[in-house]
Amino acid sequence: MTLKVPCPNCAKEVVWQTSSTFRPFCSKRCQLIDLGEWAEENHKISQSIQGETPLTEEMLDAMEDEFVLNNKFFVEPE
Image (cartoon, one colour):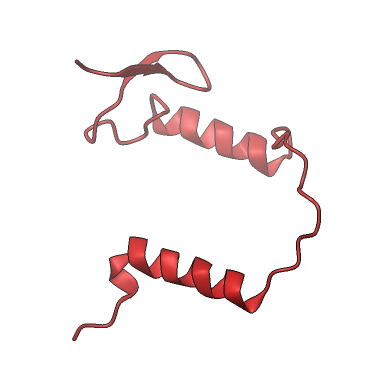
C-alpha cells in the first residue's frame, strides 16, 4: 500500500516514498514557499515552552548515552 499525503502548501497529493524528493511537499516551489513563511515568522510552534527544569549530570549522561546508542555514526571505530 502506497501512502499518499497532501502537500502542506497546496494540498496536492504526494506519494510518500524515497523518489519523492521534496516530500511532504509536491515540489521545490512549495518547499521554498513554506520555508519563506517560517523565515517571515508567519508559522509558529504553538506549544508553549516548558518550564525551566534543572539538568543534573546524571540526566545529561543518560541523554548522551541514549544519543550515542541511537546514532552509531558518532561512535569511533574500534
